[in-house]
Image (cartoon, rainbow, N blue to C red; front, side, top):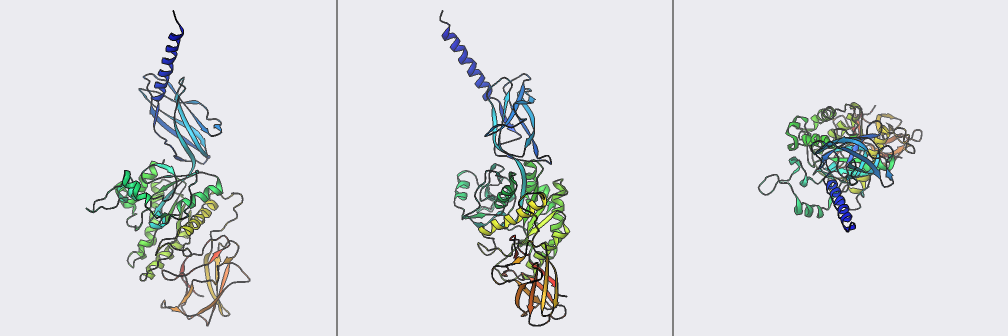
Length: 491
């Protein structure tokens, strides 16, 4: 009897059966390719997985975590759960900050695996606000993708982050969908969505530059959660609308926060342009502070770091008072809201009448990263000590000049060319032709001397960045810009 063919047939059957079994083990939840998991205070994350396996009995499910260099120490093949009625679930505990990782699972005794790939453990940041956070910069020389920066795109897919981060028309949440000819909200999908994205000429923002700078500084991977939408007001972001879920901006943001694990490192915010009307601007500060409090409460993170941009320029006439009122409210909010930080945008170039240009969006993202690393990584080597950037303290007239003192200056004050952006106004608010020269105080590089033709009148005030389209160029040696401020009484 010829035995070799029989053994060959048996071996082939064994391999085929094993391959068939292995093909039936699947990961169906808990983690997906390119997902970023929020690290804990111990710089590790627990990754939950679940799936199915073609096995009626209670068999052990094993998992391991690998990088391109091999298995991660302490996370080689180990038991994480058992198969029960064809289903399994388990948790891989203590995955260290870093990646990209491949997470493999198998049924004990079966060689083949199912896997999720390019997983990162690091810091998650939510992006909120209106168009300057959404990103309307020209898609020319935009921030390039970084393999250590992933994004939970608006269609709820984890992807390697690239511009544009916000593709509203393809979003899962209906609040972002455009209206069609019948004025019905319509989501783009398939070929229509692909064609739309391929034809985009604008869409660069500050989120990706921020994340890339954070990675450069800390080495910690970043996951972005874009939630912004252009042209939106504080009322449209109202926490009172959260029960509407994806039909509201706040509800959609909260849903996405929960979808990425319900824990993040912080929030980036850029909004206020739509609240600059005479009616809305006086209410802005209260709404803004309540929004921050609501986000922290709903995220169950009372000390959530919250960094935001003071609105910049708008090449448009009318509504100057409301515009400046929002800017001043944002400036004051920084000292009123704990664990917050503001960066200025008044010295930025634009790509159109109101949207910050792509090169300066990179700078704006870097400014926010400087604040974040200073607050969250105080012992970071090579980047400290660091101040928040020039903050106005006082304006005092002495001997022919108004001395303007600033705090939080890195090194000394500077400007490209002649220092510009300051104006003196009388008690009625009318600007005066008064300042003829501005110099950094030779006795104190964190102060300016504004030389005036005469002593300012009683009740005079100082502004920096008055109006909607001023030319302002005051920075410090760390390229942190001075914010719009005023009216500040001149003493």
